[in-house]
Length: 128
Image (cartoon, rainbow, N blue to C red; front, top):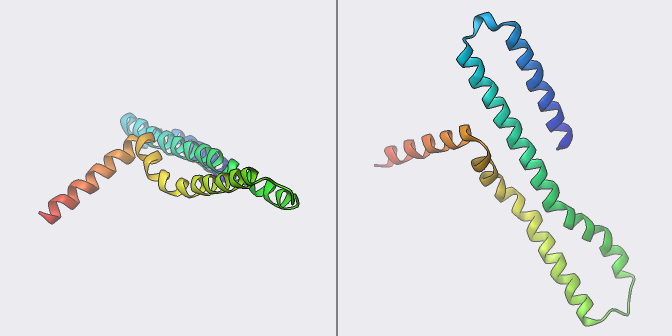
């Protein structure tokens, strides 16, 4: 994911440079709007990568610990219970990332919110 964020950022930068070379074809307000949408798209990607890393690190730690923890045979019941609870919590965190992407995009990008409102309004109008 980080690789693709870097590649997208590079692509947006080259796109902006091309636009600046062809500035005589585009009005100033349009250029500002395109730069804003590029910035918001990049911000959405950065926030998603940060959330992905934060939510998957506990699962990765547990996945590394689990094979070593199985070799210990004289664990107490409390230790086994803590491992089970930690496993369930890390699995829940991993599964919450896909559901959070909608909320991340909604809170991060004004353009995404505007499009969401437009879609919901068009759905409400079509059903009424």
